Length: 367
Ligand SMILES: [Fe+2]
Ligand SMILES: [Zn+2]
Image (cartoon, rainbow, N blue to C red; front, side):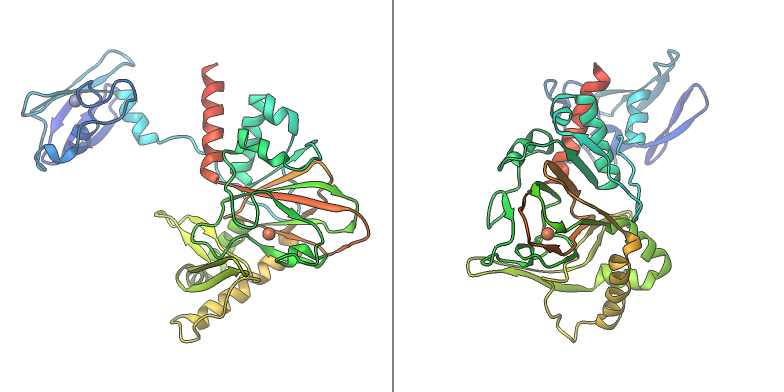
């Protein structure tokens, strides 16, 4: 049980022999005392530039009280900082996030009953967790009335209002602004690819569906990209680095962005896929890397269009399909426009769903 002060770190050895190295500036920055935090909110008041960049603890000690070990620091100005071992370990562990699971044609999405989704916190948390893992959730037994998606804000967070409409009607319409308003097949895509930050969740509410055909199709973009990354790493790289233009427009709207199809996070995990054959625009043909890009787009599109990689099911009246739309592409088979078919869709944001999940989970674990 000890704490050794080094030039950049305090090296702590807990009573069970486990070591951890804690940087001086990290220790000072995260001091949990009442002078360094707003007690009411736990927000930090201490600001790093107020201490010397080379600050080091003057004294450091570990007090062992069984499971309640703590590290005590005294700083050169006399300020005292105490960390519990639990607090140090929680900062290493990070917070719980559901793990992604990938899927193909055999996948059938988790379903949850509409009433249970809104009134049973445990069922709602399980449904949202399944959504965070797979990128898909189907709600059944929803009211077959217009505007039902307004109510979904209670679980999904505020509607992200887009132009054209707050809640979009999709039915055969000779004046419709895109191919969704015909009975033609729609290839897999995500919506609003012409925006720098397209909506990250889409909810598709089928009010009535009496037409022949018109199955709903979903594709796990992240799963296919992971497969593509292992089989063709160079082509995968081209999708991540070569940018191309996307545009959505009509007489009153004009969205345009130049971006790669795939973006990665700081761990090179896939963060988003932008895939819309209908709205991608002619690239500058002199773009560096365009030859590799086109080869990659060709290969990846074969995966997207392969029926083995597409989960296909029929959305009936009262079903709501919710997709993580930076990950999951949606499509629709052709249908025979011989009866009623009316779908409404609206957009939400993934951060707000995660928020909803974590709040539910916190309330359930505290109960
Ligand atoms: Fe769409
Ligand atoms: Zn403090």
